[in-house]
Image (cartoon, rainbow, N blue to C red; front, side, top):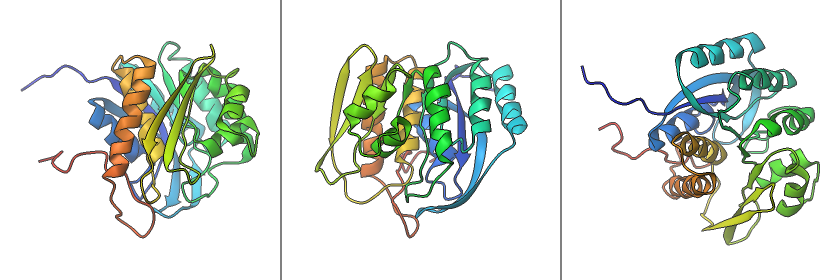
Length: 265
């Protein structure tokens, strides 16, 4: 029997997307591509396709705690990736889970809206994420519409949102691409005043699961020990390539190709 060195373990607390474009499947594929081991704990079940979400159900708090505690007791968790929560109770659940992992980097993807625009939780969930989870994060990765919800600035710019949110989290990556600009600007802000802008060419079409792909990749790069700014660049570059090579398996948005075609050959 061959034995290999263990890959870094990333605990993923996310929802399940039956279309396979976003959620835990996106997390697993992106982490495999980084050379990490994904430990997926389901927070919610959704009814969605590549067009939009039509319904969701948040799992019972005890079930989510049991999943996470089983992983923590058995596997050396090197990073945590947070996706869809959907309820105030699930925010409390994550706070309790992270109390067991005080030195482990948490990457928070504040999933508040589906790609098609459908809500994935009530407005107060965004407030609870800002107040209770962002202070626990190594970095949060909202897109601009999500950053506006978190900052309670309906028409705020990325800079304005960052000014409102940085008192809560040390690092903030606000991703672009929601306007009509030909070049996308992704902005990394740090509480000490540092700022980095990463640009990439806009790709045609709309994509299902790009945010999940970015956040889980970033968690994987941190689990591998990569320095934060470098890890952000690696995650953005990888995500852009998955969108460049995306496919359209259904009638809606394109799905990032996170694994090479010959991955299992």
